[in-house]
Length: 110
Ligand code: SF4
Image 1: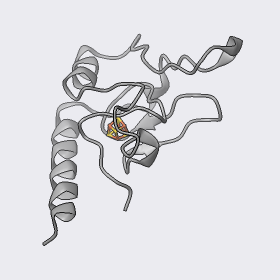
Image 2 (image 1 turned 90 degrees about the vertical axis):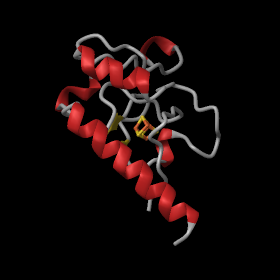
Image 3 (image 1 turned 180 degrees about the horizontal axis):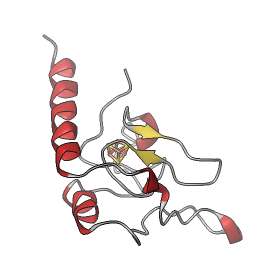
C-alpha cells in the first residue's frame, strides 16, 4: 500500500469524524463575502453558523489562503465551487469556503 493511499484514507477517516460531529447544512453559503464592490473574495464570515461549525473551522485550521500552493480547496475532494466570484462549499467544513483556501482535512481529488 502506498503512502498516498494511507494519506487519503486517513484524511477521509478524519473527515468522516468531523461529519459525525457536525451535520453539513445546505445553508453553508451563509456569510460568503463575494467580490461585489470590487473587493477581493473573502470567505471568513461565519455569521449564522452554529458554534460547533465555527469550532470545526478553527480546529481544522481553515484559512482563505492556503500555505501550500499544491493543497488548495479547489483541488480538494470535499470542495464544491460556487458561482464565479463567490465562495464555494465543503462537504466536511461548514460555511463559505475560498477556492484558494485550505484546512487540515485537505485530500486530493481522486
Ligand atoms: S481543504 Fe478546503 S475543501 Fe478540503 S476539507 Fe478543508 S475546507 Fe474543505
